[in-house]
Image (tube, rainbow, N blue to C red; front, side, top):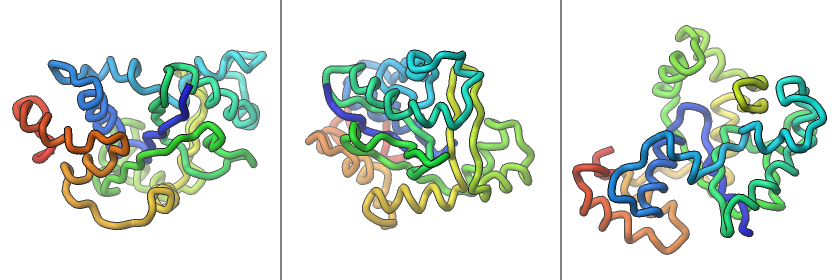
Length: 213
């Protein structure tokens, strides 16, 4: 059993890209990962299956307050999914909601935080959430922004883009600029495999050229 390595970001900020990158790198597959295979490699923090076992009612009927009380137990369960540390995708704000922490630090091994230009985020949000551009802009500035239960997921708390990124950047050690996609990808791998990025992208330039991504 290992700890959780959070793959964290504000919604529509490149989390799927990051999961695809890590899947292809660490599993060294002969072809790029299918997006539908990513759940076999990285768990979803808000997936209802981790919470149902701790509830007496259907997930859809559980209030955010109740979900927050069992969240630490769901996170502990996630560490049992694989023998070693487990990647878990989260869009949650790094802080508290309803008086409880959004992330169980007792089972946390580390994390990777992804930032995307908010001008790009807001355009993606119009499609994902079915919002007008003005509504998406308003949501980016809403410090109380959250989702509701449904569709196989428990509520997520996002807060505003600025608050989310500020906390994420602080946890990552500052707000320094990126040094290019390849260099950044090498830097985010604490597993001694950073040097493999260049070799594998060179070998698969047609399928996974992260230099030009």
